[in-house]
Length: 298
Image (cartoon, rainbow, N blue to C red):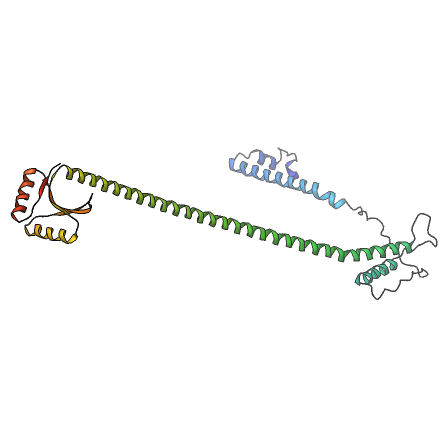
């Protein structure tokens, strides 16, 4: 009544109609609007539920059942072909094949014709082929297992060979690196030794050259100065005696070996002196000490 009363025509002459027409309070009008909206929303929900649920409730037709299931039972008078006795030396594969053959015979069709139709194999042939296939399959399983085992062994050998090759290559690279390092160290050591020898030879040559230069300078200086020669003697005792006398006079003397036409001699000299006058004064002292001599100038 509440929902349908909205569409009912009101009589304005009745007290209810006059009261509704005369209603002019804004709050009352807003309350009526809210109530009307709610009623419209409820009606929409009811219509939606009816559209969704009614077809499902009215659908009473039985659902189709799947295809017929054929169940065949073996006949009592069916002849079961004899199963050959297994060979005692046969493997486990033959026993499994016999069990497969017995199971195939047990599920023979119900309406089997006595004679096989031309071109269609009989049940015995089917059973024989099934048993042979089972035997082949059982026999093939060990062969396949052998092949798989052989394949695994081959892969393992290849992996070991690869690992060994890698180790050998690493060892060869390490040995090559060590050899190269040793050769490099040997070359560096040889270079250092050669450099040291060259430096020693250069130093030796420089020292010898310096010594020669000093000797030349000394000879030049000696040749350009004055000497006082006491004498040239062939006997060492005489040389020592003369030099002892010179030492007593407070003078320094030197020995100079020389080759003469009469043989090797040892000269006893004093000097060198920068001037002839200085050499003459030393000669005078020698003569005062009882020794003879002469001044030798360049």
